[in-house]
Amino acid sequence: MNGLLKDYEVGDFFDEMFSAPGKVRPHYELLAQRLGEMEEGELERKCLLAEKSYLNQGITFTVYSGDEGTERIFPFDLIPRIIPSKEWEHIERGLVQRLAALNLFLHDIYHDQRILKEKIIPEEIILSAKHFRPELIGFDVPKNIYIHICGTDLIRDRQGVYSVLEDNGRCPSGVSYVLENRQAMKRVFPKLFTKYPVRPVDRYAQDLLAALRHVAPHGNLDPTVVVLSPGIFNSAYFEHSYLARSMGIEIVTGNDLLVKDARVFMKTTRGLKPVDVIYRRMDDDFLDPTVFRKDSVLGVPGLIEAYRKGNVNLANAVGTGVADDKVTYYYVPRMIKFYLGEEPILPNIETYLTSDESDKKYVLENLGDLVVKAANESGGYGMLIGPHATKADIEKFRAAILADPRGYVAQPVINLSRSPSFCDGRAEGRHIDLRPYIISGEKPSIIPGGLTRVALRKGSLVVNSSQGGGSKDTWVLDDEEGGGDETPTPQSQSQSPIENRAATDAKQRPDFQPEIS
Image (cartoon, rainbow, N blue to C red; front, side):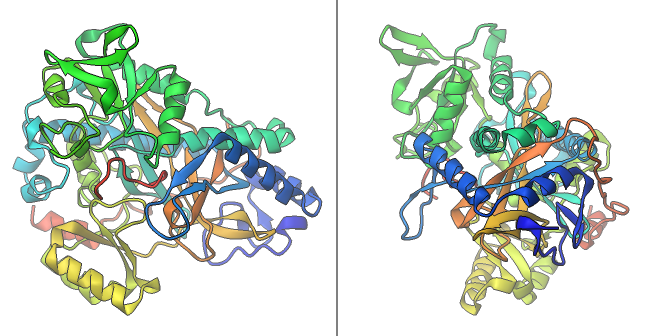
């Protein structure tokens, strides 16, 4: 190796680019060659070019804590992540399977609740969930699709096995950066793109609009679709406006809509225009002050009445938050077996429920070795990484778990896979994850690759933008030219201790996630 990769250290992790020190994986060879040919300072100049482009376009995200200011340019690493086609096919099958089970689960718990009656999931887990909406019990959503857009976070462990870290089924954010990252890469690496058969990502807006039109109420073949945003001060407003513009539809706030005779209308200069489908980018609590939070000035009074009467559809459906609760996450493999009769293609991370007495005892005795997460937080907030935590933080979480056992889960520290990233003038390994975006319409559609998030702080395992993370372009290859490894899979889909145990005892703001939560 020479150039940028000359002194690259693989470390004791699964490295996306290197199978061993100095040994490049086949599908990365052309990229390694290009990086090796670069003159000193060339990649840094390309980084500045990309950063200037992001600044000029206003591609930013918002952080709600800290003293560095809230509005920041989203960090972008120019060394792409490459996924061979066979590897991606495995991921796709797992994501489609998982989303199918989640949609069946949501329909079930708002109707017959078979999964609760048959004690596959304890009733109290679901009925006590923060985002379970009893107001929607018995309500039929169009086409039985609850999660129209899902962002499922994947990681790779030390053996290279892909596992699901969490599901985001309410207002998953970040897809606009996938599309902008690709445009930036085409500008700074145009020749490299001609050498790799990279699958395009630019159909996302068309696929999303088609899915939203597909679920219009009353089978309307020419529905009016809008994006409902909390407004320009929201962390994700760039994405809201970007997607509305890309789909050729209106972006609105609550003040732009009104409900009359249980129908939703958009105010226009030509009068009121009926609205059929709302892609909402705010949490349930803020949608309708007559049903949820009475103090919300962001929603639309009467919206839920119009929704329940079938005169407007909301994507994602109200009440989907119960499916991405971090306690519910634990039960998704059981959902797949219960509803589909299949083994999970993509496994969960081993998870401990502090609502279970034996698990709680173990967690409290091992807080310094575990990752603890609040059940309904996101964006890297409400999380303890035991090995890097202070004694004060550990004791704070101990008290929180004892006060609210249902509100937390714990997991072992997973050494996320690493990928070369350009940091301080050199290529260094940084931990990454992957958020693919799955659209559920007439048929499932998945953007090839999705968003690779990077923990740009050396040694950090937290990839969220609010915690110092960034992103890189994700290239899914269209064929196996350039090789590729076989996708490692779990050795025997063996059950965790928690699964064995189960077998024996049959923020004040909407869309609060920092832009990539």
